[in-house]
Image 1 (cartoon, rainbow, N blue to C red):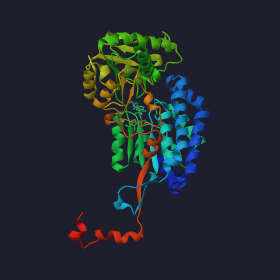
Image 2: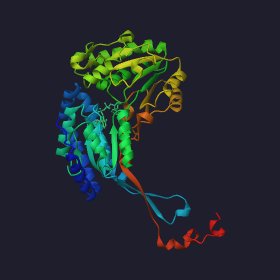
Image 3: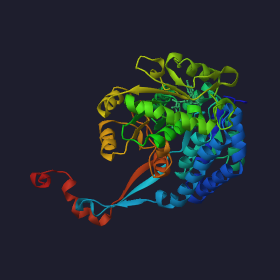
Image 4: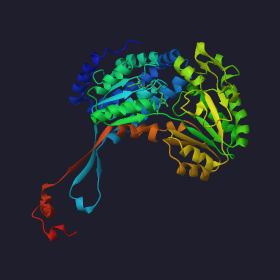
Length: 458
Ligand code: NAD
């Protein structure tokens, strides 16, 4: 990957600032055109995107086609269908006291938005926020992750080919480029990645007092009640744990359930994995690998072979780690000390939902919390007694899909949210505008000095 020279970064900001100041991006027609082009890009180039991600981490084509290109196209359609309504001034009325004024919320773009992406969904995590930034009328700079370098290069090439280069640019590189961008003439930062780097990004944004959205990670727990449909539960957890080789921010990180449920669940998860990847996942085209040697080594070290009841095989040459289940896990185990971000599934046994709630509440607020049960009251009890970025009852990850729901974390798992209208709002400054009529002067006499008791009586 050829990195963008650091010397070029000030020029990029200058060009984008001039474009923004020209008012070009405020035209709704321009915004729609860019989003239509983005749709076209993710349709015409989907196979090129899939090949790049496969070269980066043996990612199955289907996972790029479905979870990156397909989701981005849906978001484009949803945004195109609603942008007129979202971008319109929204007139408001409240108490009689201010009835003489016309009042509206006027959404305005921030200016230049910096989108810093992570590598694990290399197209989704850069291009989906871009839809919101463009819909709201901003210029944007995308900084894809250097860890998926083939994908990053393709993002740069295709953005240049399909979108307006005077307003949308891609900067390639790693920490130095990101730091230079954060110090540049930027008005808004949208970051996806680890919590640790999120704090660095937030500090940089604080220096400039610009808004920041942090889409981070953490350990997403799953509670499985004894009354859950275990066959379907096993299949859904198996799917969510191993798509993208577990390198999904919303992937189930660990399971909490009773000993009785654990013994029923393990065969169902194993059965699902065998049906997805055969008995030999290393030779399956549907099974993704770890992104690089560093992450392979990191996740391998989290495996305690004495606790493995399924899987556990690794192959350093291919950065391959098999789908793996570990039991008798406790909080002192390495696998419980950090977000796994790999295909290991530890199970911790609890006696009931109260113990599960206590376990969850003594840890940082997760990006997602999952509950499997056939009892809606139980699900609601868990939702009301805990906090997480999002929750899905009886499934995993899928809560990210509907554009009507905000996607984001809480506490250490993130700050702010996006998708659909939430993206538009995230990338807009909501400016209050009030029009006061001249004829109302006689009604405002009370506010003018000199003050007296009559004026202050309410
Ligand atoms: P990463 O290594 O790709 O880093 C993310 C971005 O930060 C990259 O563009 C990188 O260049 C930049 N960066 C790295 N170090 C930096 C520094 N010191 N200063 C400035 N910029 C720096 O991604 P990652 O951190 O390996 O991603 C994995 C994490 O991201 C996991 O915790 C995962 O849960 C989280 N994640 C969250 C979401 C979400 O939507 N909430 C999505 C995907 C991943």
